[in-house]
Image (cartoon, rainbow, N blue to C red; front, side):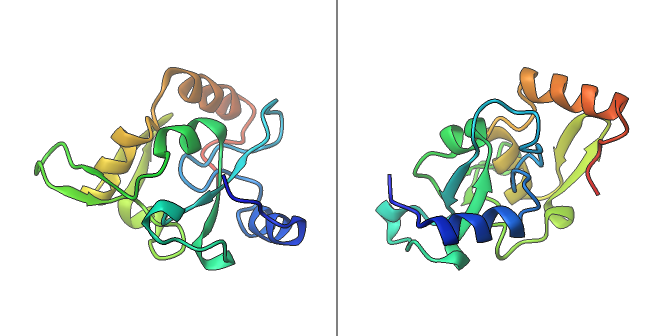
Length: 137
C-alpha cells in the first residue's frame, strides 16, 4: 500500500464527489472509509499522482486489487478494466434498476471482476432508490 498525502486524498475525494468511481456508491452513511485506488497498480508501474488515482469503496478496491485487466465473459478476451480518468462511465455501463450492466468488453469485465452487483451493493442501491438518491446523477 502506498502513502497518499492528505492534500492528494482530499483532491481525489472531491473530484469523485465522495462516490466510488467504479460502483458509484456514496461514502456518506458508509462505515468503512473509501480507499484511494491506483488505477494502474504500482506493481504495473503506476504512480501516486492525481491522474492515476480514483476513489473506491472498500469492496471495489479489494476486488480490483493489483489488477488493471480482467476477462470479458462474452469475448473471452483479457481486457483493460474501467479507468475513471480515461473512460466515460456512461459509455461502459448503464443502470437497470439497482443493477449495473456492462455495455462494452471493458464494462462487462469490470462488472464481473469488481463484483459491482454484489448482494450488499444491490441492497444499498435499493435503499438509496427508496430515498430518492439512486441512481446517482
